[in-house]
Length: 291
Image (cartoon, rainbow, N blue to C red; front, side, top):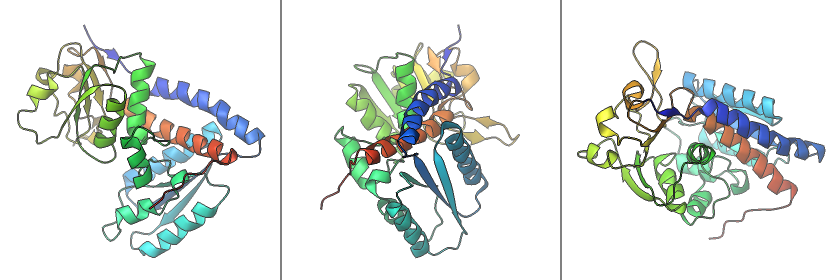
């Protein structure tokens, strides 16, 4: 029996429809949600991501603007742009498309974004709030995964969840969000010795390593929930995840496809965070970091 497919495209459509109602209310109040995207260089993948984000904004009623810079731009110029966006009443969310050029200081760029406009959830203030269970803006990809699990009524409390990947964007925040929901969480990496001994014991397996099809059917517990965050392009041009989908879907209870799984949810949760930021701005709520 094949696993039940967790369709990220369908869940994203439903979530966007719900949040569009909230965006429409803000527009009626004269506060249209606004997202500014900063992109540096001409990385083809980044350019596609930005176009998809702008298209999604348009469809849901979010004002968007894109600020493009050449690869060799000075960091100070980008910081000046961020400061202007911080002060703009039309912009409620600021996103800097990663990765950044080698001469940039990632942390300095991220922490220059006003915390009430940090809709990616990467500012140290929001990361710290995530650790304590008080985050306002959740990182978009883990937020999307949690939404997928909840929409399928998959229990988290008391479950053993194995997260393979320790990035600041997915793996670490994913673990904290699962812990907050009462899961027992094990964090592994692609270099974990005898990785299968951990993955085979997972009720829920979340994989985000960037290594194509590294999780095989023999590494998965029968009936497990398998969430594949990875996206890799093969030599034949086709996309695949970090999980051997065709083999694992005959073992798992639930599984996300690639493409069409977590990817659409990441952009959707960015839209949700932007609308939430606009709602908070309309209500006069500010987030203040203290030293």
